[in-house]
Image (cartoon, rainbow, N blue to C red; front, side, top):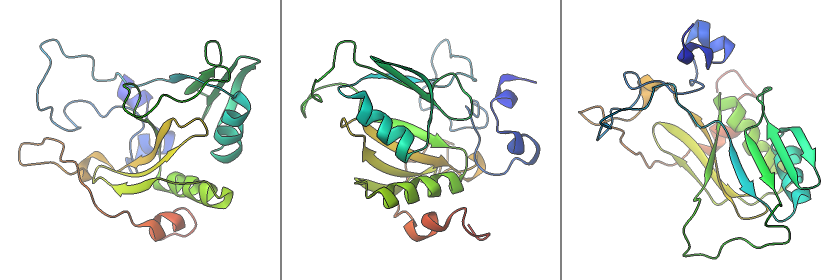
Amino acid sequence: MDLKEQTKAPAETETRTGSYVGNPGSKAGAAPVERAPRPIEDGVDIGHVHLRASDLGKIKDFYVGILGFDVVVEAPTMLFMSAGGYHHHLGFNTWESKGGSPPPPGTTGLYHVAIRYPTRAGLGDALRRLRDAGYAIDGFNDHGTHEAIYLRDPEENGLELCWDRPEKEWDRDANGHYALGNRRLDLAGLLRAGLDESS
């Protein structure tokens, strides 16, 4: 089994329905506008994000208590969390930032972290969790390739919660390049996703 096959969710390995989990590869995905002289291997993906934190308690309350991530490592100055048994998708530490404040607007750095759900039903569940917790959401978008919910975690780190459509449904131009869509997200449908058979 190649790397692409290994990164798929079990049900998708057999049926090819829903979004992929992992990198679709240069032949299946969007055509690059510019190809690197020495292209990186197709199976490369983002494994985890490690961020500085001010208050690990607030971080845990949000990522574990609201979004539902599992804690895989917890110590006084660090917290690692994952979904589905991975060693860690998200890491936070207070080694140099305990009690600190977010960077002010106008500075460089991370814009947002995208947390990709393997199904639309999973993204719908995330939206219901946020709604039920009364958590502030900054915006929503249907980009054609994926549906997205935008918000900030308790320490003002930008987050995009998203679900990728199957590659064959991605918006592309005539040359196969990624065409960034900007459509109104079907919020009512997303809230129902996973609750009934029509989603």
